Length: 524
Image (tube, rainbow, N blue to C red; front, side, top):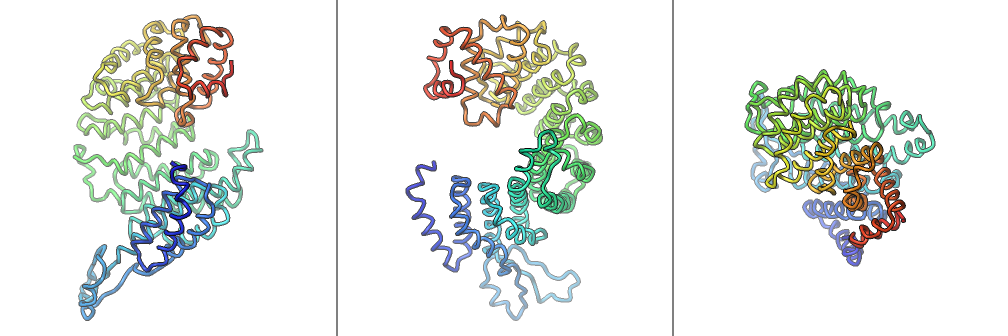
């Protein structure tokens, strides 16, 4: 895509910058959007674009033009000529009934687009954006209480991208040489920014009245948590859990219009509650088993979403949230297994494929987290998973069922169920419906190879083909964790050395680009 646009880049940017000289909010809005798209395309490879456009973005962000106009009845005729209003409100006490407040949406859209573009520039350039950081924080920070939700929504995303610039510029180099203590290190400038930014995000989560703004704040906290780690986030954990309890209880200001007692509500709150559940999963990932007491406190609140009376989208969210958290709690997830088994048994038979998918995932997570507790129930789990391998089943659901089989083997590679499970896993490599489940499949095969390599002999060709397809993909870092990548590469190398001729025949059947990847990364 970049190559296709390279020839037109200079001319396009020149024309777009000329257009910004016109007195048009709409042109500025769409041009900022175009520059954001270009920055997404080139990442940090066009610093000259940022240098040229950023001053204009900040000018739009700082501008007070169009934020609000008070109009009296004497100006009514002129008011008719104003651009469309976001809203108008008369004074509650009735003393100024001849006056109202109007907002010019063109200015509003321009400001919102500018905030978004700053975030894209920062995200693309990373540490190289540092010379602009303080100036951007000054302008962006002034919008924290901005009256319109469109601006506040983009603000949340831009905030965490600006924080990432500080982290990458100041803290990442320090951590690179810090050894085991790396996660405890934060540069003073980054630490100060973390404090102020988390204060703002926590305030937004608990008090903003717009669901999407709160959802974006949750996503910003996710990104920051994964970046700095548990040690630096520990000081915010109590307040985070207070906010999570408020949101899972559906009692936050942004949820005030809802009837909290109606558990059969028609509309699943996919904007907010999904973001809250994803944040809880990231918190479990950040703190690992140490998060168990905090998860215990919110489990009853999540439990209400998985009741049979709730709609399918609520149930798949709740089951998925419990599964994701349990995957990081590991053995500390044991107390939730027995209460969840009846839910999962029904979930595997649910009419909704998403509920079936997450139920399969949760079964596998429990088998891996607490194998001794789950051992008596494995036959029931396998019986429940079997229908998910039918031809009519969706690929994502089928792959999560295969992932569950893989986790059973990963937990016990000498399992009596090995002859039943191994062919299903190997015959379906690579998993393409839910590519992240390839990690579980690879780890299961590596576990079997470490204990009884001979049982893999009938599947070695399929394993090499499947592993190579996954490892050579552009998104491998997203789908596989380092142990799976390293183990898969080592296994392919071992097989190529021990069985050169059969492996050469297998490699010859690979697509050319995969053969090239193999030659560069796993030479024979």
